[in-house]
Image 1 (spheres, each protein chain N blue to C red):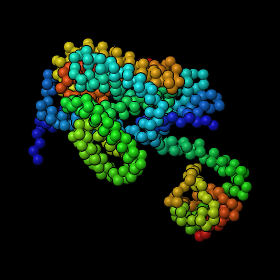
Image 2: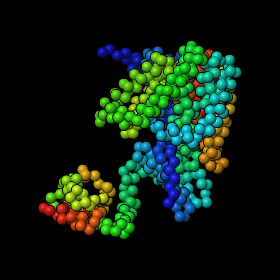
Image 3: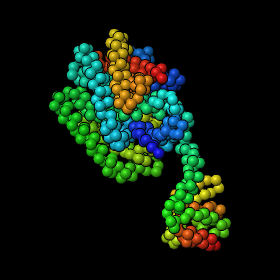
Image 4: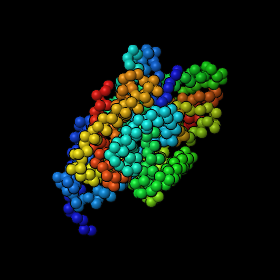
Amino acid sequence: MDVRETLLPGVGLRYEFDNTDGDRIAVITHRGGDVEVFVSPAATDPDRARRVFRLTEREAEAMAQILGAPRMVERFADLSKQVPGLDAGQVEIGPDSRYAGQPLGDTKARTRTGASIVAIVRGDQVLASPGPEEVLHPHDVLVVIGTEDGIAGVRQLVSRA
Amino acid sequence: MAVASGFLLELGLILVALSVLGALARRLGLSPIPLYLLGGLFLGEGGVAPVPAAAEFVETGASIGVVLLLLTLGLEFSVGEFSESLRRHLPSAAVDLALNAIPGALAGWLLGLDATGIVAMAGVTYISSSGVIARLLSDLRRLGNRETPAVLSVLVLEDFAMAAYLPVLSVMASGGTWQQALHWMAIALGALTFAFLLSYRWGDYLGRALGHPEDEQLLLRIMGLTLIVAAVAEHLHASAAVGAFLVGLTLTGQTADRARAVLGPLRDLFAAVFFVAIGLSVDPSDLLPMLPFALALAAVTAATKVLAGAYAARREGAGRSGQLRAGTALIARGEFSLVIIGLVGTGAGALAAVATPYVFILAIIGPLIARLVR
Protein backbone atom coordinates (compact mmCIF):
# COMPACT_ATOMS: atom_id res chain seq x y z
CA MET A 1 0.00 0.00 0.00
CA ASP A 2 1.17 3.48 -0.81
CA VAL A 3 1.45 5.69 2.27
CA ARG A 4 2.74 9.18 1.56
CA GLU A 5 4.70 10.89 4.28
CA THR A 6 4.86 14.69 4.36
CA LEU A 7 6.80 16.88 6.75
CA LEU A 8 4.80 19.62 8.47
CA PRO A 9 7.55 21.94 9.69
CA GLY A 10 7.05 22.99 13.28
CA VAL A 11 4.05 20.67 13.66
CA GLY A 12 5.05 17.09 12.98
CA LEU A 13 4.43 14.52 10.26
CA ARG A 14 1.49 13.70 8.03
CA TYR A 15 0.82 10.21 6.69
CA GLU A 16 -1.70 9.93 3.88
CA PHE A 17 -3.28 7.08 1.99
CA ASP A 18 -6.41 6.32 -0.01
CA ASN A 19 -8.65 3.56 1.25
CA THR A 20 -10.61 1.16 -0.94
CA ASP A 21 -13.67 3.43 -0.87
CA GLY A 22 -11.58 6.23 -2.37
CA ASP A 23 -11.52 8.31 0.81
CA ARG A 24 -8.24 10.00 1.52
CA ILE A 25 -7.17 9.35 5.10
CA ALA A 26 -4.57 11.59 6.72
CA VAL A 27 -2.97 10.90 10.08
CA ILE A 28 -1.03 13.75 11.64
CA THR A 29 1.38 13.02 14.44
CA HIS A 30 2.24 16.12 16.41
CA ARG A 31 5.64 16.61 17.97
CA GLY A 32 4.16 16.40 21.45
CA GLY A 33 2.69 12.95 20.68
CA ASP A 34 -0.89 14.01 19.94
CA VAL A 35 -2.47 12.48 16.87
CA GLU A 36 -5.14 13.92 14.59
CA VAL A 37 -7.02 11.94 11.98
CA PHE A 38 -8.47 13.70 8.95
CA VAL A 39 -10.49 12.38 6.07
CA SER A 40 -11.44 13.87 2.74
CA PRO A 41 -14.21 11.67 1.45
CA ALA A 42 -14.18 10.53 -2.15
CA ALA A 43 -15.88 12.92 -4.61
CA THR A 44 -15.30 15.99 -2.42
CA ASP A 45 -12.58 18.63 -2.72
CA PRO A 46 -9.43 16.50 -2.33
CA ASP A 47 -7.51 19.49 -0.99
CA ARG A 48 -9.73 19.94 1.99
CA ALA A 49 -9.83 17.45 4.83
CA ARG A 50 -12.31 17.16 7.65
CA ARG A 51 -10.93 16.37 11.06
CA VAL A 52 -12.47 13.22 12.43
CA PHE A 53 -10.91 13.15 15.87
CA ARG A 54 -7.91 14.05 17.95
CA LEU A 55 -6.14 11.68 20.32
CA THR A 56 -3.72 12.34 23.15
CA GLU A 57 -0.51 10.34 23.21
CA ARG A 58 -2.01 7.72 25.54
CA GLU A 59 -5.21 7.42 23.56
CA ALA A 60 -3.23 7.05 20.37
CA GLU A 61 -1.23 4.26 21.95
CA ALA A 62 -4.40 2.44 23.00
CA MET A 63 -5.78 2.87 19.48
CA ALA A 64 -2.57 1.54 17.95
CA GLN A 65 -2.80 -1.54 20.14
CA ILE A 66 -6.40 -2.18 19.19
CA LEU A 67 -5.52 -1.92 15.52
CA GLY A 68 -2.16 -3.60 15.82
CA ALA A 69 -2.74 -6.67 18.02
CA PRO A 70 -4.72 -8.93 15.67
CA ARG A 71 -2.49 -7.85 12.75
CA MET A 72 0.61 -8.84 14.63
CA VAL A 73 -0.58 -12.37 15.33
CA GLU A 74 -1.71 -12.67 11.70
CA ARG A 75 1.66 -11.49 10.49
CA PHE A 76 3.48 -14.03 12.66
CA ALA A 77 1.26 -16.75 11.27
CA ASP A 78 2.17 -15.62 7.75
CA LEU A 79 5.81 -15.50 8.70
CA SER A 80 5.88 -19.06 10.03
CA LYS A 81 4.22 -20.19 6.80
CA GLN A 82 6.82 -18.42 4.70
CA VAL A 83 9.92 -19.53 6.59
CA PRO A 84 10.13 -23.31 6.93
CA GLY A 85 11.14 -24.42 10.40
CA LEU A 86 10.04 -21.15 12.01
CA ASP A 87 7.10 -21.35 14.37
CA ALA A 88 5.09 -19.08 16.60
CA GLY A 89 3.86 -20.23 19.96
CA GLN A 90 2.20 -18.98 23.10
CA VAL A 91 3.65 -19.70 26.52
CA GLU A 92 1.86 -18.82 29.73
CA ILE A 93 3.70 -17.77 32.87
CA GLY A 94 2.33 -19.96 35.67
CA PRO A 95 1.62 -18.34 39.04
CA ASP A 96 4.43 -20.33 40.67
CA SER A 97 6.99 -19.71 37.90
CA ARG A 98 10.28 -18.36 39.22
CA TYR A 99 10.10 -15.60 36.60
CA ALA A 100 6.73 -14.22 37.73
CA GLY A 101 7.58 -10.77 39.12
CA GLN A 102 11.03 -10.85 37.47
CA PRO A 103 12.15 -8.75 34.50
CA LEU A 104 11.91 -10.47 31.13
CA GLY A 105 15.67 -10.11 30.66
CA ASP A 106 16.28 -12.46 33.60
CA THR A 107 14.89 -15.41 31.66
CA LYS A 108 17.76 -15.05 29.16
CA ALA A 109 15.34 -16.92 26.91
CA ARG A 110 17.02 -15.95 23.67
CA THR A 111 20.49 -16.95 24.82
CA ARG A 112 19.30 -20.20 26.28
CA THR A 113 16.80 -21.36 23.66
CA GLY A 114 17.39 -19.27 20.53
CA ALA A 115 13.71 -18.30 20.46
CA SER A 116 12.57 -14.66 20.69
CA ILE A 117 9.81 -13.26 22.83
CA VAL A 118 8.16 -10.73 20.53
CA ALA A 119 5.11 -9.77 22.58
CA ILE A 120 3.48 -10.20 25.95
CA VAL A 121 -0.28 -10.58 26.16
CA ARG A 122 -1.50 -9.38 29.56
CA GLY A 123 -5.26 -9.55 30.01
CA ASP A 124 -6.67 -7.72 27.02
CA GLN A 125 -3.46 -5.77 26.50
CA VAL A 126 -0.64 -6.60 24.11
CA LEU A 127 2.87 -5.33 24.81
CA ALA A 128 4.64 -5.46 21.47
CA SER A 129 8.46 -5.87 21.41
CA PRO A 130 8.87 -5.90 25.19
CA GLY A 131 12.24 -4.70 26.51
CA PRO A 132 14.40 -6.80 28.88
CA GLU A 133 13.31 -4.54 31.78
CA GLU A 134 9.63 -5.48 31.32
CA VAL A 135 8.49 -7.25 34.50
CA LEU A 136 6.54 -10.47 33.91
CA HIS A 137 3.26 -11.00 35.72
CA PRO A 138 1.66 -14.35 36.56
CA HIS A 139 -0.73 -15.40 33.74
CA ASP A 140 1.10 -13.28 31.17
CA VAL A 141 1.18 -15.02 27.83
CA LEU A 142 4.46 -14.76 25.94
CA VAL A 143 4.30 -14.75 22.16
CA VAL A 144 7.41 -16.67 21.09
CA ILE A 145 8.96 -16.95 17.66
CA GLY A 146 11.54 -19.64 16.97
CA THR A 147 12.04 -23.25 16.06
CA GLU A 148 9.75 -25.86 17.55
CA ASP A 149 12.53 -26.89 19.95
CA GLY A 150 13.19 -23.28 20.90
CA ILE A 151 9.57 -22.66 21.79
CA ALA A 152 9.46 -25.84 23.84
CA GLY A 153 12.65 -24.65 25.57
CA VAL A 154 11.00 -21.39 26.57
CA ARG A 155 7.97 -23.28 27.86
CA GLN A 156 10.21 -25.46 29.99
CA LEU A 157 12.25 -22.49 31.16
CA VAL A 158 9.36 -20.45 32.49
CA SER A 159 7.62 -23.43 34.06
CA ARG A 160 10.53 -23.85 36.50
CA ALA A 161 9.47 -23.02 40.01
CA MET B 1 15.05 44.02 50.56
CA ALA B 2 13.07 47.14 49.86
CA VAL B 3 10.75 46.81 46.90
CA ALA B 4 9.11 49.84 45.38
CA SER B 5 5.42 49.16 45.84
CA GLY B 6 4.67 51.56 42.99
CA PHE B 7 6.65 49.35 40.59
CA LEU B 8 4.94 46.15 41.68
CA LEU B 9 1.53 47.74 41.46
CA GLU B 10 2.09 49.16 37.99
CA LEU B 11 3.50 45.89 36.69
CA GLY B 12 0.67 43.95 38.26
CA LEU B 13 -1.91 46.25 36.69
CA ILE B 14 -0.23 45.94 33.28
CA LEU B 15 -0.32 42.14 33.48
CA VAL B 16 -3.94 42.11 34.63
CA ALA B 17 -4.85 44.41 31.74
CA LEU B 18 -2.98 42.10 29.35
CA SER B 19 -4.78 39.02 30.65
CA VAL B 20 -8.14 40.72 30.07
CA LEU B 21 -7.09 41.77 26.57
CA GLY B 22 -5.67 38.32 25.84
CA ALA B 23 -8.86 36.58 26.98
CA LEU B 24 -10.90 38.95 24.85
CA ALA B 25 -8.69 38.20 21.83
CA ARG B 26 -9.07 34.43 22.26
CA ARG B 27 -12.82 34.87 22.63
CA LEU B 28 -12.95 36.64 19.30
CA GLY B 29 -10.61 34.12 17.75
CA LEU B 30 -7.86 36.70 17.29
CA SER B 31 -4.19 36.67 18.10
CA PRO B 32 -3.53 38.54 21.35
CA ILE B 33 -0.52 40.35 19.83
CA PRO B 34 -2.43 43.34 18.39
CA LEU B 35 -4.31 43.85 21.64
CA TYR B 36 -1.07 43.78 23.63
CA LEU B 37 0.23 46.45 21.27
CA LEU B 38 -2.89 48.48 21.85
CA GLY B 39 -2.42 48.08 25.60
CA GLY B 40 1.11 49.47 25.27
CA LEU B 41 -0.16 52.39 23.22
CA PHE B 42 -2.69 53.35 25.87
CA LEU B 43 -0.02 53.29 28.52
CA GLY B 44 3.07 55.41 28.60
CA GLU B 45 3.78 58.77 27.11
CA GLY B 46 0.85 60.35 25.40
CA GLY B 47 -1.41 57.53 26.59
CA VAL B 48 -4.10 57.57 29.24
CA ALA B 49 -2.15 55.93 32.05
CA PRO B 50 1.59 56.58 32.21
CA VAL B 51 3.60 53.87 33.97
CA PRO B 52 6.90 55.55 34.89
CA ALA B 53 7.88 53.06 37.60
CA ALA B 54 7.43 49.96 35.47
CA ALA B 55 8.91 51.46 32.30
CA GLU B 56 12.46 50.36 33.09
CA PHE B 57 11.42 46.78 33.73
CA VAL B 58 9.32 46.71 30.59
CA GLU B 59 12.32 47.85 28.57
CA THR B 60 14.61 45.20 30.08
CA GLY B 61 11.90 42.57 29.86
CA ALA B 62 11.35 43.41 26.20
CA SER B 63 14.89 42.45 25.25
CA ILE B 64 14.51 39.16 27.12
CA GLY B 65 11.20 38.72 25.31
CA VAL B 66 12.90 38.99 21.92
CA VAL B 67 15.55 36.48 22.95
CA LEU B 68 12.92 34.02 24.18
CA LEU B 69 10.76 34.44 21.06
CA LEU B 70 13.68 33.55 18.81
CA LEU B 71 14.97 30.79 21.09
CA THR B 72 11.61 29.01 21.08
CA LEU B 73 11.33 29.56 17.33
CA GLY B 74 14.69 27.86 16.89
CA LEU B 75 13.53 25.01 19.12
CA GLU B 76 10.52 24.47 16.85
CA PHE B 77 12.61 23.68 13.81
CA SER B 78 15.01 20.94 12.98
CA VAL B 79 17.71 20.79 10.35
CA GLY B 80 15.72 18.16 8.48
CA GLU B 81 12.67 20.38 8.22
CA PHE B 82 14.72 23.25 6.92
CA SER B 83 16.57 21.25 4.26
CA GLU B 84 13.37 19.51 3.17
CA SER B 85 11.58 22.86 2.89
CA LEU B 86 14.50 24.37 1.02
CA ARG B 87 14.63 21.48 -1.41
CA ARG B 88 10.94 21.50 -2.25
CA HIS B 89 9.83 25.07 -1.76
CA LEU B 90 12.75 27.32 -2.67
CA PRO B 91 10.93 28.89 -5.68
CA SER B 92 7.91 29.61 -3.46
CA ALA B 93 10.15 31.28 -0.92
CA ALA B 94 11.80 33.40 -3.61
CA VAL B 95 8.43 34.53 -4.99
CA ASP B 96 7.29 35.28 -1.44
CA LEU B 97 10.41 37.37 -0.80
CA ALA B 98 10.15 39.35 -4.01
CA LEU B 99 6.42 40.00 -3.77
CA ASN B 100 6.41 41.08 -0.15
CA ALA B 101 9.75 42.75 0.55
CA ILE B 102 9.57 45.08 -2.46
CA PRO B 103 6.32 46.87 -1.47
CA GLY B 104 7.79 47.51 1.98
CA ALA B 105 11.01 48.89 0.53
CA LEU B 106 9.01 51.13 -1.84
CA ALA B 107 6.90 52.35 1.06
CA GLY B 108 10.06 53.18 3.01
CA TRP B 109 11.39 55.09 0.03
CA LEU B 110 8.09 57.00 -0.35
CA LEU B 111 8.23 57.93 3.33
CA GLY B 112 11.70 59.37 2.79
CA LEU B 113 13.40 56.95 5.16
CA ASP B 114 17.15 56.36 5.03
CA ALA B 115 18.67 53.09 3.78
CA THR B 116 18.26 51.45 7.20
CA GLY B 117 14.60 52.44 7.29
CA ILE B 118 13.99 51.09 3.78
CA VAL B 119 15.62 47.75 4.58
CA ALA B 120 13.66 47.59 7.84
CA MET B 121 10.34 48.29 6.08
CA ALA B 122 11.10 45.57 3.54
CA GLY B 123 11.57 43.13 6.43
CA VAL B 124 8.41 44.27 8.21
CA THR B 125 6.20 43.61 5.19
CA TYR B 126 8.02 40.40 4.21
CA ILE B 127 7.87 38.31 7.33
CA SER B 128 4.60 36.58 8.18
CA SER B 129 3.89 35.64 11.76
CA SER B 130 4.72 31.95 12.06
CA GLY B 131 3.37 31.91 15.62
CA VAL B 132 -0.02 33.32 14.68
CA ILE B 133 -0.33 31.29 11.48
CA ALA B 134 0.72 27.92 12.88
CA ARG B 135 -1.86 28.32 15.62
CA LEU B 136 -4.46 29.49 13.14
CA LEU B 137 -4.01 26.46 10.89
CA SER B 138 -4.37 24.16 13.86
CA ASP B 139 -7.45 26.02 15.21
CA LEU B 140 -9.10 25.97 11.80
CA ARG B 141 -8.31 22.25 11.52
CA ARG B 142 -6.45 22.71 8.29
CA LEU B 143 -3.44 20.54 9.07
CA GLY B 144 -4.86 17.78 6.89
CA ASN B 145 -5.31 20.02 3.85
CA ARG B 146 -3.16 19.71 0.78
CA GLU B 147 -1.93 23.31 0.85
CA THR B 148 -0.78 23.19 4.48
CA PRO B 149 2.75 21.77 4.03
CA ALA B 150 3.46 24.52 1.50
CA VAL B 151 2.26 27.21 3.92
CA LEU B 152 4.32 25.84 6.79
CA SER B 153 7.39 25.47 4.59
CA VAL B 154 7.17 29.06 3.39
CA LEU B 155 7.01 30.12 7.05
CA VAL B 156 10.10 28.08 7.92
CA LEU B 157 12.06 29.58 5.06
CA GLU B 158 10.97 33.09 6.03
CA ASP B 159 12.14 32.49 9.57
CA PHE B 160 15.51 31.27 8.36
CA ALA B 161 15.80 34.25 6.04
CA MET B 162 15.40 36.39 9.15
CA ALA B 163 18.55 34.85 10.61
CA ALA B 164 20.54 36.24 7.67
CA TYR B 165 18.60 39.49 7.55
CA LEU B 166 18.71 40.59 11.20
CA PRO B 167 22.52 40.96 11.39
CA VAL B 168 22.45 43.17 8.29
CA LEU B 169 19.77 45.36 9.78
CA SER B 170 21.49 45.40 13.13
CA VAL B 171 24.78 46.61 11.64
CA MET B 172 23.02 49.23 9.52
CA ALA B 173 21.00 50.45 12.50
CA SER B 174 24.17 50.93 14.52
CA GLY B 175 25.63 53.09 11.75
CA GLY B 176 27.75 50.52 9.93
CA THR B 177 28.43 50.61 6.22
CA TRP B 178 27.02 48.30 3.55
CA GLN B 179 30.28 46.40 3.42
CA GLN B 180 30.20 45.83 7.16
CA ALA B 181 26.59 44.73 6.93
CA LEU B 182 27.35 42.17 4.21
CA HIS B 183 30.40 41.06 6.15
CA TRP B 184 28.23 40.32 9.17
CA MET B 185 25.60 38.64 7.08
CA ALA B 186 28.27 36.28 5.81
CA ILE B 187 29.34 35.59 9.38
CA ALA B 188 25.74 35.00 10.43
CA LEU B 189 25.28 32.52 7.57
CA GLY B 190 28.50 30.83 8.66
CA ALA B 191 27.20 30.63 12.22
CA LEU B 192 23.92 29.21 10.91
CA THR B 193 25.80 26.51 9.01
CA PHE B 194 27.89 25.81 12.07
CA ALA B 195 24.77 25.51 14.24
CA PHE B 196 23.36 23.08 11.68
CA LEU B 197 26.48 20.95 11.76
CA LEU B 198 26.55 21.06 15.52
CA SER B 199 22.92 20.03 15.72
CA TYR B 200 23.30 17.33 13.07
CA ARG B 201 26.53 15.81 14.32
CA TRP B 202 26.58 16.44 18.03
CA GLY B 203 22.97 17.39 18.77
CA ASP B 204 22.48 14.31 20.94
CA TYR B 205 25.63 14.98 22.88
CA LEU B 206 24.72 18.62 23.39
CA GLY B 207 21.22 17.63 24.45
CA ARG B 208 22.67 15.25 27.03
CA ALA B 209 25.15 17.85 28.28
CA LEU B 210 22.43 20.45 28.74
CA GLY B 211 19.60 18.11 29.63
CA HIS B 212 18.81 17.40 33.24
CA PRO B 213 15.92 15.47 34.75
CA GLU B 214 14.92 18.47 36.83
CA ASP B 215 13.04 21.21 35.02
CA GLU B 216 14.66 23.90 37.13
CA GLN B 217 18.16 22.85 36.08
CA LEU B 218 17.14 22.57 32.44
CA LEU B 219 15.61 26.05 32.51
CA LEU B 220 18.64 27.65 34.12
CA ARG B 221 21.11 25.93 31.82
CA ILE B 222 19.30 26.77 28.61
CA MET B 223 18.49 30.34 29.64
CA GLY B 224 22.05 30.90 30.81
CA LEU B 225 23.61 29.57 27.61
CA THR B 226 21.13 31.46 25.43
CA LEU B 227 21.67 34.79 27.16
CA ILE B 228 25.45 34.43 26.92
CA VAL B 229 25.33 33.56 23.21
CA ALA B 230 22.82 36.38 22.65
CA ALA B 231 25.10 38.82 24.43
CA VAL B 232 28.10 37.79 22.34
CA ALA B 233 26.04 38.08 19.14
CA GLU B 234 24.77 41.51 20.18
CA HIS B 235 28.27 42.65 21.02
CA LEU B 236 29.37 41.66 17.53
CA HIS B 237 26.37 43.58 16.11
CA ALA B 238 24.90 40.33 14.83
CA SER B 239 21.77 40.88 16.94
CA ALA B 240 20.96 39.04 20.15
CA ALA B 241 17.89 37.58 18.45
CA VAL B 242 20.01 35.67 15.93
CA GLY B 243 22.21 34.27 18.70
CA ALA B 244 19.16 32.99 20.55
CA PHE B 245 17.75 31.49 17.34
CA LEU B 246 20.99 29.59 16.75
CA VAL B 247 20.93 28.13 20.25
CA GLY B 248 17.36 27.00 19.70
CA LEU B 249 18.29 25.37 16.39
CA THR B 250 21.19 23.46 17.87
CA LEU B 251 19.01 21.75 20.44
CA THR B 252 16.99 18.84 19.08
CA GLY B 253 15.02 15.82 20.10
CA GLN B 254 13.89 15.24 23.62
CA THR B 255 15.86 18.12 25.11
CA ALA B 256 14.17 20.48 22.66
CA ASP B 257 10.72 19.08 23.51
CA ARG B 258 11.30 19.55 27.20
CA ALA B 259 12.87 22.97 26.72
CA ARG B 260 9.78 24.08 24.79
CA ALA B 261 7.56 22.97 27.65
CA VAL B 262 9.72 24.60 30.33
CA LEU B 263 10.29 27.86 28.45
CA GLY B 264 6.73 28.25 27.15
CA PRO B 265 5.24 30.18 30.07
CA LEU B 266 8.34 32.34 30.45
CA ARG B 267 8.23 33.15 26.74
CA ASP B 268 4.54 34.08 26.96
CA LEU B 269 5.21 36.50 29.81
CA PHE B 270 8.22 38.23 28.34
CA ALA B 271 6.89 38.28 24.79
CA ALA B 272 3.78 40.05 26.09
CA VAL B 273 6.06 42.55 27.86
CA PHE B 274 7.90 43.03 24.55
CA PHE B 275 4.69 43.76 22.63
CA VAL B 276 3.69 46.25 25.32
CA ALA B 277 7.12 47.87 25.10
CA ILE B 278 6.71 48.41 21.36
CA GLY B 279 3.33 50.00 22.02
CA LEU B 280 4.85 52.11 24.78
CA SER B 281 7.65 53.40 22.57
CA VAL B 282 5.19 54.88 20.09
CA ASP B 283 3.35 58.08 20.87
CA PRO B 284 -0.30 57.63 19.80
CA SER B 285 -0.40 61.21 18.51
CA ASP B 286 2.31 60.29 15.92
CA LEU B 287 0.21 57.42 14.64
CA LEU B 288 -2.91 59.18 13.44
CA PRO B 289 -1.40 61.06 10.50
CA MET B 290 0.31 57.84 9.35
CA LEU B 291 -2.78 55.67 9.59
CA PRO B 292 -4.01 56.05 5.97
CA PHE B 293 -0.54 55.17 4.69
CA ALA B 294 -0.35 52.13 6.98
CA LEU B 295 -3.79 51.02 5.80
CA ALA B 296 -2.84 51.31 2.15
CA LEU B 297 0.39 49.39 2.74
CA ALA B 298 -1.54 46.72 4.63
CA ALA B 299 -3.98 46.34 1.73
CA VAL B 300 -1.19 46.05 -0.85
CA THR B 301 0.92 43.57 1.12
CA ALA B 302 -2.12 41.50 2.10
CA ALA B 303 -2.75 41.09 -1.63
CA THR B 304 0.89 40.24 -2.39
CA LYS B 305 0.92 37.63 0.40
CA VAL B 306 -2.18 36.03 -1.06
CA LEU B 307 -0.39 35.81 -4.42
CA ALA B 308 2.73 34.34 -2.84
CA GLY B 309 0.73 31.79 -0.83
CA ALA B 310 -1.36 30.84 -3.84
CA TYR B 311 1.78 30.28 -5.89
CA ALA B 312 3.26 28.03 -3.18
CA ALA B 313 0.03 26.03 -2.93
CA ARG B 314 -0.26 25.68 -6.71
CA ARG B 315 3.21 24.17 -6.84
CA GLU B 316 1.89 21.54 -4.42
CA GLY B 317 -0.97 20.81 -6.76
CA ALA B 318 -3.71 22.42 -4.67
CA GLY B 319 -6.85 23.61 -6.45
CA ARG B 320 -8.20 27.14 -6.60
CA SER B 321 -9.84 27.18 -3.19
CA GLY B 322 -6.78 25.60 -1.60
CA GLN B 323 -4.59 28.27 -3.18
CA LEU B 324 -6.83 30.99 -1.77
CA ARG B 325 -6.77 29.38 1.67
CA ALA B 326 -2.97 29.21 1.60
CA GLY B 327 -2.68 32.83 0.49
CA THR B 328 -5.04 34.25 3.07
CA ALA B 329 -3.50 32.19 5.87
CA LEU B 330 -0.16 33.89 5.24
CA ILE B 331 -1.46 37.48 5.52
CA ALA B 332 -0.91 37.84 9.26
CA ARG B 333 2.22 39.74 10.26
CA GLY B 334 3.19 39.80 13.89
CA GLU B 335 5.99 39.18 16.30
CA PHE B 336 8.92 39.32 13.88
CA SER B 337 7.83 42.52 12.20
CA LEU B 338 7.78 43.93 15.72
CA VAL B 339 11.24 42.53 16.43
CA ILE B 340 12.45 44.51 13.41
CA ILE B 341 10.75 47.67 14.64
CA GLY B 342 12.28 47.12 18.07
CA LEU B 343 15.74 46.62 16.56
CA VAL B 344 15.70 49.83 14.56
CA GLY B 345 13.93 51.67 17.34
CA THR B 346 12.68 55.20 17.02
CA GLY B 347 15.88 56.23 15.26
CA ALA B 348 14.46 55.84 11.76
CA GLY B 349 11.94 58.66 11.61
CA ALA B 350 8.45 57.63 10.65
CA LEU B 351 9.26 53.90 10.62
CA ALA B 352 7.72 52.95 13.97
CA ALA B 353 4.75 55.25 13.42
CA VAL B 354 3.87 53.46 10.17
CA ALA B 355 5.02 49.94 10.93
CA THR B 356 3.32 49.60 14.32
CA PRO B 357 -0.22 50.31 13.08
CA TYR B 358 0.61 48.24 9.98
CA VAL B 359 1.38 45.17 12.08
CA PHE B 360 -1.63 45.93 14.26
CA ILE B 361 -3.94 45.97 11.24
CA LEU B 362 -2.60 42.81 9.62
CA ALA B 363 -2.38 40.87 12.88
CA ILE B 364 -6.13 41.44 13.28
CA ILE B 365 -7.29 41.34 9.66
CA GLY B 366 -5.08 38.41 8.59
CA PRO B 367 -6.64 35.73 10.82
CA LEU B 368 -10.12 37.15 10.19
CA ILE B 369 -9.78 36.85 6.41
CA ALA B 370 -8.25 33.40 6.79
CA ARG B 371 -11.27 32.31 8.80
CA LEU B 372 -13.72 33.71 6.25
CA VAL B 373 -12.11 31.92 3.29
CA ARG B 374 -13.11 28.30 3.48
